[in-house]
Amino acid sequence: MTMHERHGDRARRLTTKALLTIGEELREARVQAGLTIRELASNTGISPAQISRIERGALRHVAYETVVALGAALGLDIPLRAYPSGEPVRDGAQLALLARFRTRLPSDLRHRTEVPLGLLGDRRAWDDVVVGPGWSLPVEAESRLHDVQALHRRFALKCRDAGVDRAILLVANTRHNRHVLRLASAEFGAAFPIPGKVALAALDRRVIPPGSAVILL
Image (cartoon, rainbow, N blue to C red; front, top):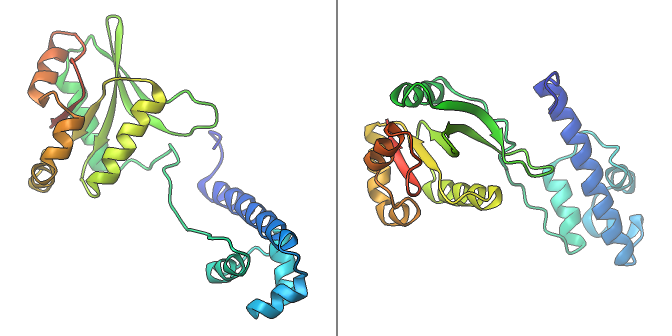
């Protein structure tokens, strides 16, 4: 998304792109199956005119169930998934958490926000990157923990794809989050081997922590 692109404009652009892509894939599958549009219509109960418009990406409003039915008739699974865009909407709690973190560290450590991973076409970004003398440390901030397994996977993938061997998971120090972390202590202990206090102490000395850590603030 460009700096001046509105969210509504971006949504319409992505919708058009998705409909064109799925239409092309459905048409290719139909042709490979040796079916005409009328034969596919007969198999699915969807009108030939509607199928034709879907294949051309010309139907701006189409039910997800309709697309799934066409895919099923052609041997295609069409899952509906949500993926981070790298441009998350920051809530007040998350912004406050990041502000507390920056205040907690020595003032001569620099911070860069929304730092892209640097991969072509990858929209993911780190919430914050702490920059010290000769080192930098990525930071992800979570104001409220939900699916810790998904969070763990997302964090690990970002570290792998960015080529970093350590990063900080910054978590708001609430009763809910402490409870979630206790329940996931075994899994998180392996992924974040350095205690948060040790990581903060290293940052206070202006040195990079020896490994990934969860810091509660």
